[in-house]
Image 1: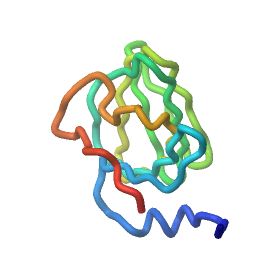
Image 2 (image 1 turned 90 degrees about the vertical axis):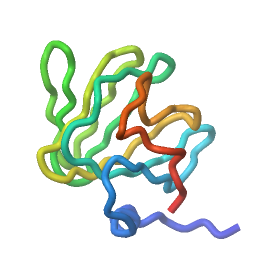
Image 3 (image 1 turned 135 degrees about the horizontal axis):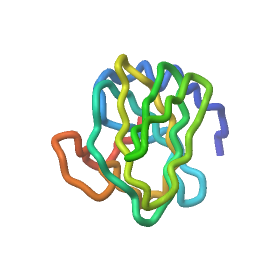
Image 4 (image 1 turned 180 degrees about the vertical axis):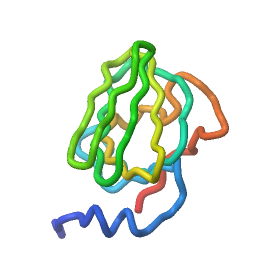
Length: 121
């Protein structure tokens, strides 16, 4: 068995598309995903699981019905399950996410930004 570190910045360099998360690892039944985003996502929520956003580069704005929260490089935010939210980035933002394998990227809605099953890179 070959165990080696994962170079997160090198993984980010392998793709340019926004709103298309990639899987870079698995721990138990959780996937470690990375993604690039810019602009607005859609209002959604995850009924069965919390959601973790860790900003690798850039600034993420997470809108809640009672106002926004800004997450900077080196910070993370946990959105509790069942809480409606919308992500946004004025400029490209790189995210690291830890999610159960069954978590849908789109939450509880369908939109043009709904991604297919994430690919491993």
